[in-house]
Image (cartoon, rainbow, N blue to C red; front, side):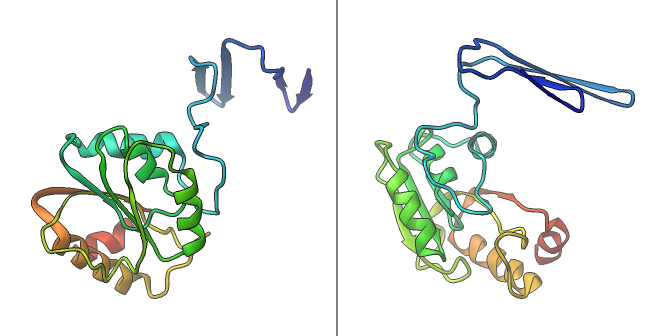
Length: 187
């Protein structure tokens, strides 16, 4: 048992429940882990890189997209593949790309799903996909902190143009970004 600044923890792997209480000024937040393993720990997530997305966030983004089994999902900035690997729970038609070959190598090694995910190195602004060929684009755009963006306004303008080119008419786009002002301007 340790204590630092009022925090007490006992983690020895035998706990069946984890309760956390956060109190700050007039607010109190109570958190209860309902599973034996934290939600962010996935068997496939053995390696990561700076800027990698947490698995529960990726899963929630995919749920927002309302993907049907026969539809396609594109993550054109897949990093280590978190969204693509989580997408395997929704569909088997998954395309994932990234500019970093190192990230793609990690993603490919992590793919233990029954989905045949197409991983390929590419510039997200100039993809070799057919027009109107993708049902859903779900991605975590670089925030410009751990993964840098050259000329962010131009990047997001070209990015959205390419998204609209490859997206089917009734498709949708889910993008996690802190550059909402630039995305709105580009849209």
